Image 1: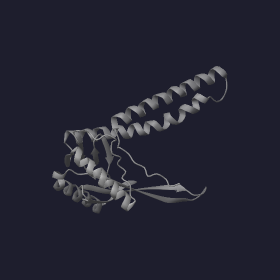
Image 2: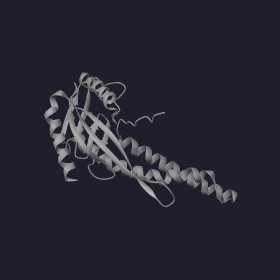
Image 3: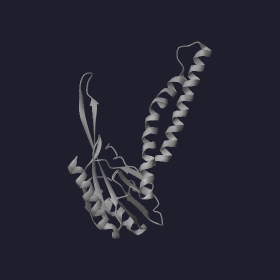
Image 4: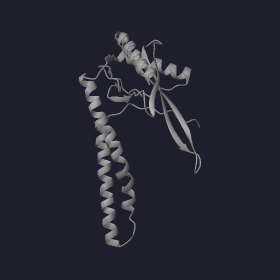
Amino acid sequence: MAKKASSSRGIRPVRYAWLCGLVTVAGIGLILMGVADMRATGKAGSPFLMLGLFPALLSPIGLGYYLLKIPVVRGMRRGTTAIARWTVSADEFRRFCEADARIGAETRTSNFYEPPRTIPAEGVEVIFSDDGVLIGEGFFPLSTTGGRRVHRVRSIAPGSPMIEFGTVLETRARTSSVTTSAVRSAETLRVPVATNATVQADGVVRRFDIAIARR
């Protein structure tokens, strides 16, 4: 069976930070319960300790990441870091979804952005900064450096204007006890563009093109 391509509605930094914080607190609570259980029973291990160990160690990493993204998203909404901004009407967004589905079928490249099940009557706001793009409530990082980075960008208009980003993620996978190999995974992010914002969209493409060339 073919593996289903991943998709997302974007990062919600405040919501995810709260979730990671709660998981961290729960993990620490389980560790404390495990310590108390070991003292009471005199045994060397406790299931509470094992259950709490990984959440207490890993969740703070996610918490720190999302806390860093909160001011980024707030700056975009305030307009202090925005480089382009438009609202895609409900009808335009519907046409985008239809055009995006056709592109996916023709090119076999599914969009990492997952549209909402119900299109808001007021449309969907799109805000770009040098750090990423907000599509509605979801934030998508668009870094041109690092492990996950944008390596190409272009404007396309197959019945509905949009910007397409190609991103790659490079990691290392262990192939034996002494060797590793490079693993490269690719994703495509297609962002809707309002019909009255094509000039802004072209500016976004040029800006990211320059950033990619300078990498």
